[in-house]
Length: 359
Image (cartoon, rainbow, N blue to C red; front, side):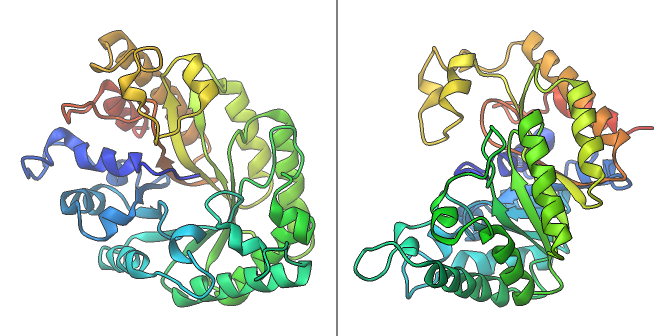
């Protein structure tokens, strides 16, 4: 799930440590050039960026990334907040930006149990919709949103986080009111709206054995029924010591057998303490104000920064070993996962990632 804070666009803002000065960053390689022969690198673009509130951020995105993903501006609550009202202002600007710079454009997300208004699941009397009524509401929404950008948005995260950590289908209102086939229907409606778009399933904790097995079963079952699943998004909300490299390798080996594109869609390396991991990296909370939750309020100590660099180096070494199956890497959210510090300077992690691109 791409959260309220567009961490990757923050990375773009500080790329090469020169955006505030308006320098050309000529002395630093861009990620997209470094990994041009391996996989795409992507940035999340939020509403405020799309609407021109941070033009320097968009300039850096265009320079250093070759793919963009919508942060919140195409989620149901933002683009279709009321039954009879759509708001495409930010989405239109987002797509126009991507087209202007020749970027691979991803829409996130069509069907999710979060950031979907309650009215979606209820009739005018406030009662839960029937299966057929909710399917029609889903179809109309997907047809309108995907259809508007037919041939312009290249790929869609169609269904997001439909499996729980125990490997079961998550018991959302989509499933309760429609049934297990709501996932297949969402892909069907998206394909009908734009047969040329790539369609993805996206989830987190994708390396856990139970969940990995469930994701494999889900994608295979969709493939057996002829559903147009082009890719699998692996959110990559990982830590300094999890998952292990053997677990990552096993995960990628399993998923690549599906024959679909693999994307690490929201990569972040959590450096915050266990208490924060339990609470979740909720960017609406003032983590920076809490010494307990944020021991790095004054910046990362050199030894921690180096350990982060070492972790990135080993991860990207693993990614490069599977580069023929990986289509895109996109960074994620909070918890100090980024490649740059508060002084807008590259961390050791930046150089470690670039170093991993070398043969």
